[in-house]
Length: 99
Image (cartoon, rainbow, N blue to C red; front, side):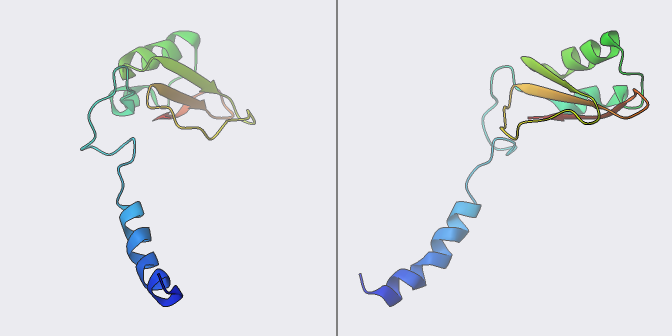
């Protein structure tokens, strides 16, 4: 294929790649044990005690839990079956998200 045609096709390929499904795409089929962070938002602002963190974890339906304190290192890998419970400097639950 001539170089000009290759360059002309590139924007279309990039556009199609941007439209590809993402693990959080609502149209994607549910993953067994997938995290539902919305179900645990009631725990935001509460003390990050073991009981509250475990209750938030259970509410999400996730298979695994990652509890993070300020300054903790966090990998950037995405896992649909993991919930992240992040606490603030005062020891309260600041954020609950999947991944």
